[in-house]
Length: 198
Ligand SMILES: C[S@@+](CC[C@H](N)C(=O)[O-])C[C@H]1O[C@@H](n2cnc3c(N)ncnc32)[C@H](O)[C@@H]1O
Image (tube, rainbow, N blue to C red; front, side, top):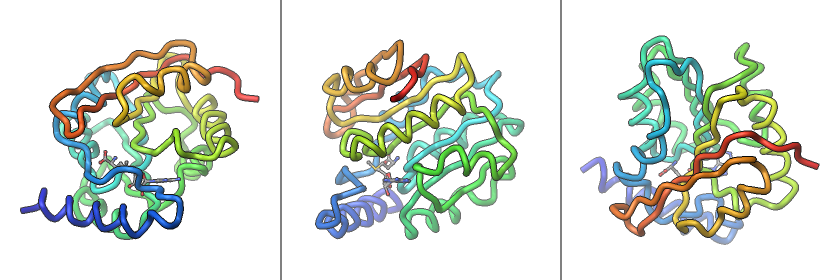
């Protein structure tokens, strides 16, 4: 039932946001398969801090909540008011998770406000390829400042491999994991070594 409701809410948001440049960018939440694949590189016994951007209805947040140790601090950011409220209902009771209704463009400030200077992973469900160039640059400038040297930027995508060159502009190393069990078949990029952004 919850899955059905999430799909209906998501599709409704997609359609209503379409005339405004569509910041939702997908017609359905990520499947359990894609959510797991997106965080499969994380060493759960070592991770201390992570941030999720563009959490939507929270399919990836759920995996984070299942796997993160109580000592791991997670900041979950979502711009849409209804999604943020839903996320707060679902995950707000977890002591180590904080749900923030906010914009990923304020990434560094959102972390600084919480006394966090560096994170182990940035998990992104953001529609990065459809961001205007300046916003993308601003995002990756901040990712560079907040990501620990060995940290990763994990990005979901519905277009397998297509955006590999895009992420290579911003990172020294980019790997892609294909997830055929999602509808449509999708995947995740794992990016390391943020480059200096002009
Ligand atoms: C493709 S959906 C992904 C949702 C979820 N992570 C999933 O995997 O199902 C993109 C999400 O990013 C959010 N979003 C878009 N632009 C954003 C921004 N600048 N800051 C924060 N969230 C944003 C949208 O509201 C939407 O929930």
